[in-house]
Image (cartoon, rainbow, N blue to C red):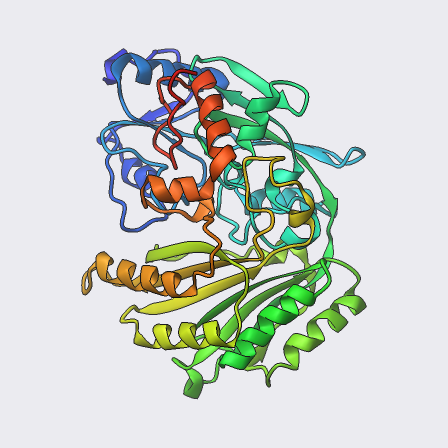
Length: 452
């Protein structure tokens, strides 16, 4: 296979014999251990087009890696070829227009640092090491979701190499269907190499961690306050046993807590007033919320990769009854760390019409992620998957949706939940137009519509 790759590739090709191979094939999902035949660190669209052509000629499975954070491990193939975008790190900021072109290999943290030098930001997720390519194509739900919407709501254009090897620049006026599909439809339509974003003035924020004792009343109260809060405030509340962190008293280690990340992007005094009701829910165990630069929300994340199983879902509410269930089930889990993450949505995200992008869940009020971190040497993944699925089923209040960016390998039914009804049908038709042979299938896959 190696001998048939074009010899004039600019990028670097790694094989299993190379010293850097094992690190390059490692992804964030610790349960994934795949060995691709080749990893190609591309240096531009021409490299991408040549690798796609080679994969089509040989029938090799093709994986595309931005930051490697796919819960399903889609950034690496077993026996196939990986297009590694990590060398695509260009960044061109137009401060006057408040826009930036960025290479798809940049991480959210790197982008935020570069934009933050001018007091500007685009909202990504909540993890700095995530690649901007992957999170953008999934939708992007993060620290600025209520004030500025999803990441895709600030996506102005993209450059993409499609299955026919063509480099296309798409936006709201050019190849509009493909641009619509990229905003939430994942990696089904080609390899995105550059993205153009809108930037917002985001410099000093009121942000950080607020740790509260977890009771049913505190959890329900937190969700209610987050829903009623000004749109400048976005929160991510994790209900879990208190980990042994320096700011948590030792006698509280293992006791249920709400570990809430708070970001108020606006006037600091108004932010203090907005956060006051959360502090009043209970005596805080730790209150690390303070004025800071926005880029401080993306700390250094070095450390071992955790083995985690998770279930993502949307819900309409989390009240006292649901909070009681969360606490009971977390207490029953045998995982090293069991948690239920609650993100109250709405605001700017909700004001975009549901059919404006391939992300169809604009009116879902809350996103819940049930997760269990476990030691694979002492317990089976299936045990924790059953626990996560069971708790998610108990919290189901009728919203059938799922967020594609947090899906693992969960089957077509769950992919269809991410892209319900007319969204699926439109995506399948666009897939048939741009990738009729389903070359890009190692993803939350949308097969091409038959007969299109």
